[in-house]
Length: 203
Image (cartoon, rainbow, N blue to C red; front, side, top):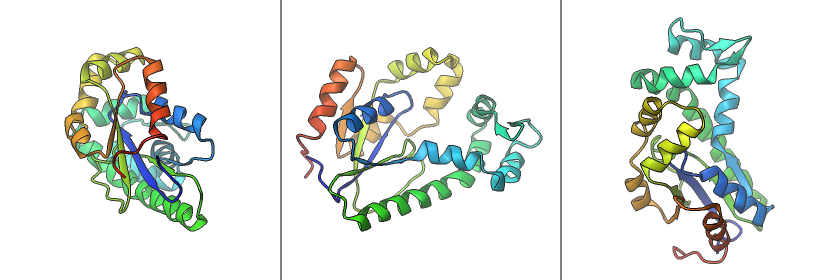
Protein backbone atom coordinates (compact mmCIF):
# COMPACT_ATOMS: atom_id res chain seq x y z
CA UNK A 1 0.00 0.00 0.00
CA UNK A 2 1.47 3.38 -1.00
CA UNK A 3 2.14 5.49 2.07
CA UNK A 4 3.09 9.07 2.89
CA UNK A 5 6.48 10.27 1.66
CA UNK A 6 6.18 7.83 -1.26
CA UNK A 7 6.34 9.27 -4.77
CA UNK A 8 4.87 7.49 -7.77
CA UNK A 9 5.03 8.38 -11.44
CA UNK A 10 1.82 7.54 -13.25
CA UNK A 11 2.32 7.01 -16.96
CA UNK A 12 1.03 5.02 -19.91
CA UNK A 13 0.24 5.24 -23.59
CA UNK A 14 -2.18 7.67 -25.17
CA UNK A 15 -5.81 6.61 -24.67
CA UNK A 16 -4.77 3.87 -22.26
CA UNK A 17 -7.15 5.20 -19.61
CA UNK A 18 -4.51 6.76 -17.37
CA UNK A 19 -6.63 9.80 -16.55
CA UNK A 20 -9.62 7.60 -15.71
CA UNK A 21 -7.45 5.57 -13.37
CA UNK A 22 -6.10 8.71 -11.70
CA UNK A 23 -9.62 10.03 -11.11
CA UNK A 24 -10.51 6.75 -9.39
CA UNK A 25 -7.43 7.00 -7.16
CA UNK A 26 -8.30 10.58 -6.21
CA UNK A 27 -11.84 9.59 -5.27
CA UNK A 28 -10.46 6.98 -2.90
CA UNK A 29 -7.75 9.22 -1.49
CA UNK A 30 -8.79 12.90 -1.84
CA UNK A 31 -5.66 13.97 0.05
CA UNK A 32 -3.43 12.44 -2.61
CA UNK A 33 -0.73 14.84 -3.84
CA UNK A 34 -0.82 15.20 -7.63
CA UNK A 35 1.24 16.86 -10.36
CA UNK A 36 -0.31 16.91 -13.85
CA UNK A 37 2.37 17.18 -16.53
CA UNK A 38 -0.10 17.70 -19.40
CA UNK A 39 -1.80 20.57 -17.60
CA UNK A 40 1.56 22.11 -16.80
CA UNK A 41 2.64 21.77 -20.46
CA UNK A 42 -0.58 23.48 -21.57
CA UNK A 43 0.18 26.39 -19.26
CA UNK A 44 3.63 26.73 -20.81
CA UNK A 45 2.19 26.42 -24.32
CA UNK A 46 -0.13 29.33 -23.54
CA UNK A 47 2.59 31.40 -21.88
CA UNK A 48 3.18 34.71 -23.71
CA UNK A 49 6.87 34.41 -22.80
CA UNK A 50 7.23 31.35 -25.08
CA UNK A 51 5.01 32.39 -27.97
CA UNK A 52 7.80 33.57 -30.28
CA UNK A 53 9.84 30.40 -29.66
CA UNK A 54 6.83 28.23 -30.37
CA UNK A 55 5.85 30.15 -33.52
CA UNK A 56 9.42 29.74 -34.79
CA UNK A 57 9.04 25.95 -34.55
CA UNK A 58 6.13 26.07 -37.01
CA UNK A 59 7.79 28.45 -39.49
CA UNK A 60 4.85 30.57 -40.61
CA UNK A 61 2.04 28.12 -39.88
CA UNK A 62 -0.85 29.73 -37.99
CA UNK A 63 -0.81 27.92 -34.66
CA UNK A 64 -2.26 30.69 -32.48
CA UNK A 65 -5.59 32.43 -32.72
CA UNK A 66 -6.05 35.56 -30.61
CA UNK A 67 -3.13 34.37 -28.49
CA UNK A 68 -4.68 30.94 -27.89
CA UNK A 69 -2.86 27.83 -29.19
CA UNK A 70 -4.73 25.94 -31.94
CA UNK A 71 -4.19 22.54 -30.36
CA UNK A 72 -5.61 20.35 -33.11
CA UNK A 73 -3.49 22.10 -35.73
CA UNK A 74 -0.39 21.82 -33.56
CA UNK A 75 -1.05 18.12 -33.02
CA UNK A 76 -1.38 17.50 -36.76
CA UNK A 77 1.83 19.36 -37.51
CA UNK A 78 4.04 17.75 -34.88
CA UNK A 79 2.93 14.17 -35.40
CA UNK A 80 3.50 14.49 -39.12
CA UNK A 81 6.99 15.87 -38.56
CA UNK A 82 9.19 14.24 -35.88
CA UNK A 83 11.83 16.97 -36.21
CA UNK A 84 9.29 19.69 -35.51
CA UNK A 85 7.88 17.67 -32.62
CA UNK A 86 11.35 17.37 -31.15
CA UNK A 87 11.87 21.12 -31.35
CA UNK A 88 8.60 21.80 -29.54
CA UNK A 89 9.38 19.21 -26.88
CA UNK A 90 12.80 20.79 -26.36
CA UNK A 91 11.00 24.00 -25.40
CA UNK A 92 8.32 22.48 -23.16
CA UNK A 93 9.79 19.38 -21.56
CA UNK A 94 12.63 20.95 -19.53
CA UNK A 95 10.18 23.42 -18.02
CA UNK A 96 7.64 20.74 -17.17
CA UNK A 97 10.31 18.51 -15.61
CA UNK A 98 11.63 21.38 -13.50
CA UNK A 99 8.11 22.20 -12.28
CA UNK A 100 7.55 18.54 -11.45
CA UNK A 101 10.76 18.34 -9.43
CA UNK A 102 9.73 21.46 -7.51
CA UNK A 103 6.31 19.92 -6.77
CA UNK A 104 7.93 16.74 -5.46
CA UNK A 105 10.40 18.71 -3.34
CA UNK A 106 7.53 20.71 -1.87
CA UNK A 107 5.61 17.55 -1.09
CA UNK A 108 8.58 15.91 0.63
CA UNK A 109 9.30 19.07 2.61
CA UNK A 110 5.69 19.15 3.83
CA UNK A 111 6.04 15.68 5.39
CA UNK A 112 2.61 14.83 4.03
CA UNK A 113 0.91 11.67 5.25
CA UNK A 114 -0.44 10.74 1.81
CA UNK A 115 1.36 9.46 -1.30
CA UNK A 116 2.25 11.74 -4.23
CA UNK A 117 1.55 10.93 -7.89
CA UNK A 118 3.24 12.71 -10.77
CA UNK A 119 1.07 12.13 -13.84
CA UNK A 120 3.64 12.19 -16.68
CA UNK A 121 2.38 10.67 -19.95
CA UNK A 122 5.78 10.95 -21.68
CA UNK A 123 7.91 9.80 -18.76
CA UNK A 124 9.77 7.24 -20.86
CA UNK A 125 9.66 9.12 -24.16
CA UNK A 126 11.32 12.17 -22.62
CA UNK A 127 13.88 9.99 -20.80
CA UNK A 128 12.96 11.64 -17.50
CA UNK A 129 14.74 10.40 -14.40
CA UNK A 130 13.26 11.22 -11.02
CA UNK A 131 15.29 9.53 -8.27
CA UNK A 132 13.49 7.48 -5.65
CA UNK A 133 10.17 7.19 -7.47
CA UNK A 134 8.16 4.11 -8.37
CA UNK A 135 6.41 3.87 -11.72
CA UNK A 136 2.88 2.62 -12.35
CA UNK A 137 1.95 2.11 -16.01
CA UNK A 138 -1.63 2.07 -17.26
CA UNK A 139 -1.56 -0.07 -20.39
CA UNK A 140 -3.96 -1.02 -23.17
CA UNK A 141 -3.48 -2.82 -26.46
CA UNK A 142 -2.66 -0.65 -29.51
CA UNK A 143 -5.96 -1.65 -31.14
CA UNK A 144 -7.86 -0.41 -28.09
CA UNK A 145 -5.88 2.83 -28.07
CA UNK A 146 -6.64 3.52 -31.74
CA UNK A 147 -10.35 2.83 -31.25
CA UNK A 148 -10.44 5.22 -28.30
CA UNK A 149 -8.61 7.92 -30.25
CA UNK A 150 -11.03 7.53 -33.13
CA UNK A 151 -13.83 7.93 -30.61
CA UNK A 152 -12.34 11.33 -29.78
CA UNK A 153 -12.57 12.34 -33.43
CA UNK A 154 -8.94 11.68 -34.32
CA UNK A 155 -8.50 10.09 -37.77
CA UNK A 156 -6.99 6.60 -37.84
CA UNK A 157 -3.84 7.75 -39.68
CA UNK A 158 -3.15 10.46 -37.10
CA UNK A 159 -3.91 8.02 -34.28
CA UNK A 160 -1.33 5.65 -35.73
CA UNK A 161 1.27 8.41 -35.90
CA UNK A 162 0.61 9.30 -32.27
CA UNK A 163 1.15 5.69 -31.20
CA UNK A 164 4.28 5.39 -33.34
CA UNK A 165 5.75 8.46 -31.63
CA UNK A 166 5.52 6.84 -28.20
CA UNK A 167 7.74 4.38 -26.39
CA UNK A 168 6.43 0.82 -27.10
CA UNK A 169 3.95 -0.11 -24.40
CA UNK A 170 5.58 -3.52 -23.98
CA UNK A 171 8.80 -1.79 -22.88
CA UNK A 172 6.90 0.50 -20.53
CA UNK A 173 5.26 -2.52 -18.92
CA UNK A 174 8.61 -4.26 -18.51
CA UNK A 175 10.17 -1.20 -16.83
CA UNK A 176 7.25 -0.51 -14.46
CA UNK A 177 6.97 -1.30 -10.77
CA UNK A 178 3.25 -1.87 -11.26
CA UNK A 179 1.00 -2.33 -14.28
CA UNK A 180 -2.71 -1.54 -14.58
CA UNK A 181 -4.25 -3.26 -17.61
CA UNK A 182 -7.17 -1.31 -19.03
CA UNK A 183 -8.58 -3.20 -21.98
CA UNK A 184 -11.59 -4.20 -19.94
CA UNK A 185 -14.61 -2.61 -18.30
CA UNK A 186 -14.85 0.43 -16.06
CA UNK A 187 -15.77 -1.92 -13.21
CA UNK A 188 -12.47 -3.74 -13.69
CA UNK A 189 -10.63 -0.42 -13.61
CA UNK A 190 -12.47 0.50 -10.40
CA UNK A 191 -11.29 -2.72 -8.84
CA UNK A 192 -7.67 -2.10 -9.81
CA UNK A 193 -7.82 1.39 -8.31
CA UNK A 194 -9.14 -0.10 -5.09
CA UNK A 195 -6.38 -2.71 -5.01
CA UNK A 196 -3.69 -0.12 -5.66
CA UNK A 197 -4.08 1.18 -2.12
CA UNK A 198 -4.33 -2.25 -0.59
CA UNK A 199 -1.30 -3.98 -1.97
CA UNK A 200 2.08 -2.82 -3.19
CA UNK A 201 4.00 -5.89 -4.36
CA UNK A 202 7.06 -3.82 -5.21
CA UNK A 203 7.68 -2.66 -1.65
